[in-house]
Amino acid sequence: MTKNAEQILEIVNNSQEHLSAEQIYLRLKETNRGAAMATVYNNLSYLYKEGFIRKISVEGYPDRYDTMKRHEHLVCRRCGKLSDIQLDDLTEVLQKQVSVEMFSYDLKIGYLCEECMKEDCMKIESFKYK
Image (cartoon, rainbow, N blue to C red; front, top):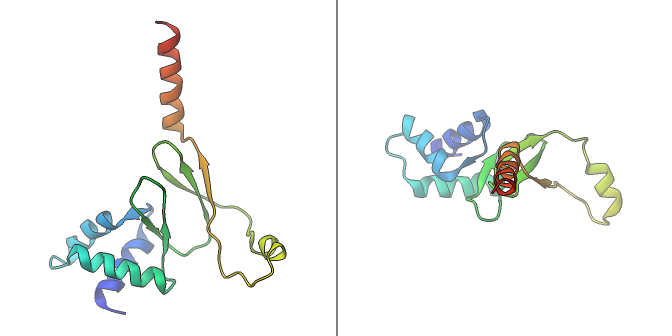
């Protein structure tokens, strides 16, 4: 693994957020001034394909990257906010329902986050009193 790939993997694994390639690039530049955006994209692709990191795709938003630690995600349907959620391991349940060997799964649960719910309530309240 290249030094750049190691640094990017460390950034992803040490982050409490779900970082986009651009956010990873900005953090990488703090310690590696010569890093280029293409380097970040190439290494993220490598790390994802080799199973070192997860790529989280949410329609309308840039891909974000996460650790391989088993957990699921709540995805706000309005703002795209990602939150981690820990559920019981579904591997056995899913394995019983499919006839092929399953290596992994990616569960994203759509919801409205608290901020978007408040915004909706405020819109409804302001509409009522007009």
